[in-house]
Every structure is written in C-alpha cells, then in structure tokens.
Length: 311
Ligand code: GDP
Ligand code: MG
Image (cartoon, rainbow, N blue to C red; front, side, top):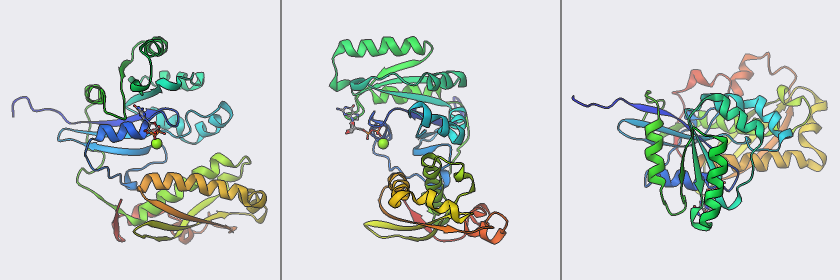
C-alpha cells in the first residue's frame, strides 16, 4: 500500500519525584483505553505502568523507581537496576512538578545525559502556578538539557497532553510489538514471579548488610478475592544468623519490606493486597534444582501452563 507507515515502538521512561503526577499523566495519555499491564511484560529493570497499543505503534510507559533517592540510597539502587533501566529506555519524560521544582541529583542528570536517549521535559501542574514560575522552570531545565523537547501540561485535566503524545510518537523509534497486542491474560505463575521480584527488590533496598545476595523469595500461596488478593510469600535465607537481619528489631524491617512491597504490588495489579511475609532458613537452596523450580527460577519453561487471570 502507498504511504504505509512503519511500526514504531519503545520504552518511554517517566522520571519524576513521587507526586509529580506520573500516574495521572499516564492515565491521561492512555485516554479511555483499558490499562492492562501484564506482569509477563514486567522486567526488574522497568516497572511498566501502561502499554498503549495503536495500529502502528506500541508505547510502553515505565518508570524507574528509586532513581530520585538521596545519594546514599541511590548508589545502592544504581547497582541493582537503574543503570540498565536508563540504557534500555527509548525516550525519557522528565516530569517536573511546577509547584515543587526541586533540583535533581547531579549524578542522575549526568546518567540521563550520558545515555544519549531523547528527553522530553514535561512541566506538570500548569493549572497551579504563575506564568513567571513556568518560565523560570523552563529556563532552568532547557539550560540543563539544551537538546530536549519540552511541553507544559496539566496532567489532571489533560491540558496539552495530546501534544505530549504527538511528541512521543515523533520520537519513538521504529520497532516491533514487544508485547502481543491482544494478550490481556496474564499467567498466574508469572504474577507470582513478579510479586517475588518486588519483595526481593525491597529487601535489597532496605537491608544494609551484604545479605540480600543470599536471599530468595517465593510466593507460596496466591489467593484471588474480588476485594483483595491474599499473598503468602516466603523469604529464604541461607543461615540462621541472617534471619534477624530480615526481621529487624521487633519485626520492624520485615514490616517495612512488606509495606513497600504491598504498595508496588497493588499498583501492579490494580487491586488491594493482603501480603503476609515469612522468613525461612534453607541452607542449600542454590544447589537444589527442584527448589529453584519451586522458587520460580525455572518459570520460563512453564510459561503456558497454569491458569490465567486478568489484571
Ligand atoms: P505520582 O506519584 O508521580 O504517580 O503522582 P500522582 O499521579 O499520583 O499525582 C499526585 C497528585 O498530584 C495527585 O493528587 C494528582 O491528582 C495531582 N496532580 C497530578 N497532576 C496534576 C495537575 O496537572 N494539576 C493538579 N492540580 N494536580 C495534579
Ligand atoms: Mg504513581
């Protein structure tokens, strides 16, 4: 056919402080489209917020949690996933909250620049600020990213978000359907896997010792309920002495791991979650293949088995 368009696709990584409006923006960009995100599509590097499928494009919106942490925490998070998440992105949306235009960590700005990935500076909450503040922000940020496109939006009411989408589509590279466009079902097994990954990530971020490397997490039970899913997960450590490190004084560490993980899981599945965490000692989990299977490591082999669920 004459003038047939090539298919475009890619990861649009939205970077912004909590409350900058990331979720609001993604909802607005998705319009009335159902936002079904398959955990199968998740990676530990990208937390996928939504996938916008068009006839000739696929935009995968993701964010990189932990990127805008204070320097000492950021260092840790960097080692875990941030470096690669940045390198894998096709477009960055830097979401700047006009009501709270704080300076970002220079190391983060440096990392973003060094990737060479196109940046769209997106100034949000236009409805809440004075014109002069908008101009000040634009001046500051276009100074830092002279090659970036920029747009001023109000994610809450959709002001200029269509323009943002046009810019995204312009910058989106040619590429395949990374995720099947008609696949709405997600496999329960993969869901378990991603739940365990989220928990593992929180352990990694919260525990100070070298411990996390010897920690594994698996989901023992996943009970779906209409109101709230119940998840029973087990954290496996290799030595008895590691147990108290995970549990913390009066169980505080475990509680915090659970709270942070639960929030992410709820966001992932779009539903309330009751998360119950248990710590177990198992000396040889690494060596035992059956155990690896049980803990979800061999999940790739079993992709198509098991029942499916809808997010
Ligand atoms: P996230 O933490 O970055 O995902 O931020 P959210 O999308 O949850 O938004 C945080 C708060 O800011 C919510 O109360 C939103 O309603 C509000 N918000 C987001 N965008 C705008 C906007 O353009 N204008 C106004 N007035 N509020 C906004
Ligand atoms: Mg959010």
